[in-house]
Image 1: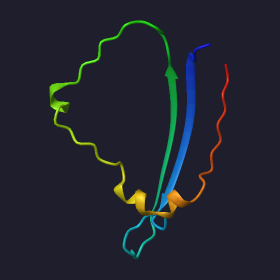
Image 2 (image 1 turned 90 degrees about the horizontal axis):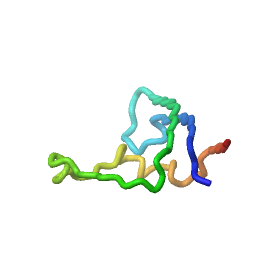
Image 3 (image 1 turned 45 degrees about the vertical axis):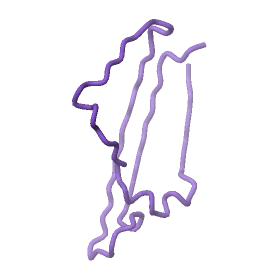
Image 4 (image 1 turned 60 degrees about the horizontal axis):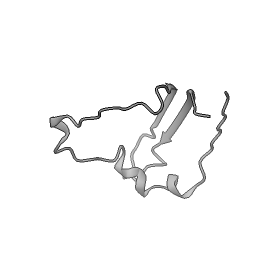
Length: 85
């Protein structure tokens, strides 16, 4: 009844047209492909989590601040999800 493993393949393509940046002479495209596998175990077992001292004063930053101002947020992404046991 608990997941034991999750596998994901993610493909991301962002072009300069997608970003809210000033006009540029050259068009750019960034492509990223990742394969991720996660294994889950030791359900209902106690854990101890401690924040490192250097992280005490950390401030969160968005990955790409400009993405919040683009048409990417106004369209439905092309998604495919599958699950298997």
